[in-house]
Amino acid sequence: MNRLVASERFQTWAARFPLTRRIVRAEGEAMFDLVAGFCHSQILQALVSFDIPATLLEADTTAEVLASRARVPLHRMHVLLRASVAIGLLKQRRSGSYGLTRRGAALAGVPGLSEMIRHHEVLYRDLSDPVAFFRGETETELADFWPYVFGAGAASDPDQARRYSELMADSQKLVAADTLAVINLKDADRLMDVGGGTGAFLAAVAEAHPDIALTLFDLPAVVPEARQRFDALAAAGTGPDRSLEIVAGSFRDQALPQGFDIISLVRVLYDHNDETVGRLLSAVYTALPSGGRIIVSEPMTGGAKPGRAGDAYFALYCMAMRTGRARSAEEIMVLLRSAGFEQVKAHPSSRPFITSVVEAVRLD
Ligand SMILES: C[S@@+](CC[C@H](N)C(=O)[O-])C[C@H]1O[C@@H](n2cnc3c(N)ncnc32)[C@H](O)[C@@H]1O
Image 1 (cartoon, rainbow, N blue to C red):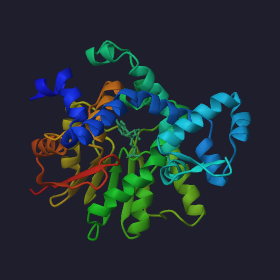
Image 2: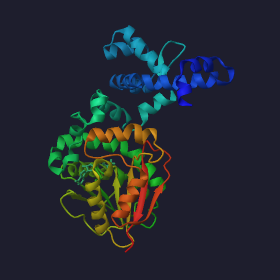
Image 3: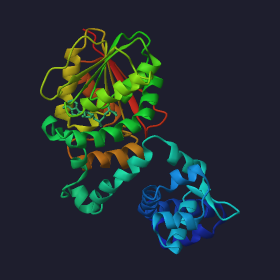
Image 4: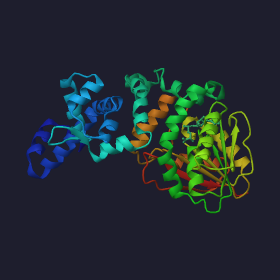
């Protein structure tokens, strides 16, 4: 069948035949979108770099104003704006000014999205020679952007730690919302977030469950940032209060603190290889009491059914990071069982491009 579809004669016939014409057209468009996808990404990158979504969120603006602010020749700005209309991010008003579509407004408003797009210039360079990339012959830059993957020593620069922590914290709001939507924390007393970054997940837990005592565990280079964030939230009266404890340490080099009925790992496992993950999950198992729960939340691959977000984005991203890999819920469940956990279950994800959640219990 595939050989038939690939043949030129069949394609010419199918493009004309009334019953197949529409399918052929839709398939052609989908194929062209794949072919042109890298241009679409760069249109997005340029829009964000010129701050156009944020500008248009304030007010509709003419091409002339946008061109002069971005120091782009007007005729080239017209090309960018028309391209952005074509991919559904902008619309042109009757007056000639440009405004945002609903999707464009989401681009301007989703926390952390613009920063995420900006930092893609690094991944884009890493993927520029895909043959070398897939052969494993590329010295990827992305790993330098996230130095902690090579251990606590590599992440000793607080300035660099701040850069990646901010990016993580901004995008954490949606991850926390989707995680909290599926897990039940009603009976929880004490929760520790391992690799909790600057505490954005714990801030969301505190808001939804003010009675849970919270502990954040992360690398020494990262925790000062977490402390500052929590002090600022507490001063504004919007953050968790005295019940927050911060522990600086590395799960590679030391045992985890004990005394928690829940330990969460949010976007932590995918940075590490199976051996490190195995050791980390065992450390969590040891730290939990009988009946204690582990929550794993991160973007996952589709397993037997590959998905666009997990398999055509996060898997490549993790490969460029060099140390970790995106895993399916099933793979994470296997690792949890090997560490001794039981009652392992995966929650269906409403937005796999944000996160998926697996949880399990230590029973003995
Ligand atoms: C991808 S970030 C996720 C941060 C946060 N959980 C979130 O989702 O926004 C991974 C976090 O794991 C932390 N981490 C990495 N290696 C660690 C280690 N050996 N011990 C403790 N934390 C570690 C990093 O510092 C970083 O904050």
